[in-house]
Image 1 (spheres, rainbow, N blue to C red):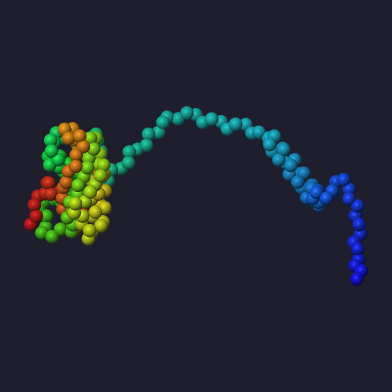
Image 2 (cartoon, rainbow, N blue to C red; image 1 turned 90 degrees about the vertical axis):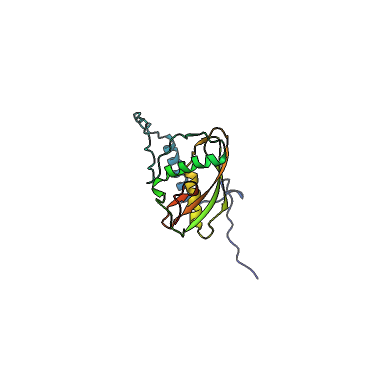
Length: 188
């Protein structure tokens, strides 16, 4: 039951019980890295030359999609009632979407019909849209009508009304062209 004992190594001041032992090559590597870090920290490169001032670049305006009139300042509306304002808004939508308006009398069967209520603030911006009758069978038309109504802003400024809520019915042809009930040319 005797076991061989390991030879006893005396402890020196540098290798106390709390001092980790490192092989010699690792200590040399760490010392070399510390020296390299000190050299790199002491190096300074000359500052990069400051570029010559250039003229301000004005970005080009975003291209206007075909059929959409460029946005200008909102026109005033002299409408005294929401019904009168509806006519101004319909003309405004037709002007902004000239190539998307169905020309002539509409055919007897339309792809979609929807009645939308639009709230316009005192600056002509759309503040809300509310469907009174949405064409639920054509969700893509619902999205397109909402997008078209919002993109047409700013609407004519309702000077006499402050803000205004008007309603119009969208008559949607399968071609993607439309008429508004306010300005329709009729239906066969």
